[in-house]
Length: 114
Image 1 (tube, rainbow, N blue to C red):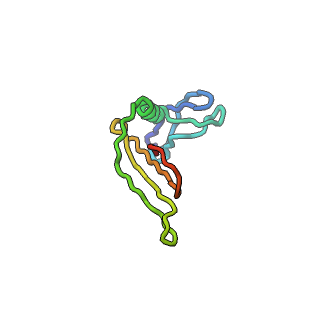
Image 2 (cartoon, rainbow, N blue to C red; image 1 turned 90 degrees about the vertical axis):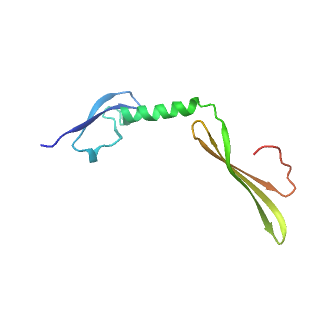
């Protein structure tokens, strides 16, 4: 008989906790169905990793640096119709990446930020 594997899981809906057995490593699933309420039954260790990552990201006071920016002009019949300004930046603390894009139509007033 082969070695059995298990993990502790908690339901995200009802809070039920139990041990989940797996016949092999290959049959392990991070999320299964709660036997009590059919909610999401999640591996406690994996859930802890996600919560830690979320809390670190949430607590970050973002300090963004611009990675790249570009302005694209759109023309039709030799007349400029629109400009599209795209900026990509990241937080130097948590490495969060953001992309912003602004389309400026001919004759539209532009404020100082995207």
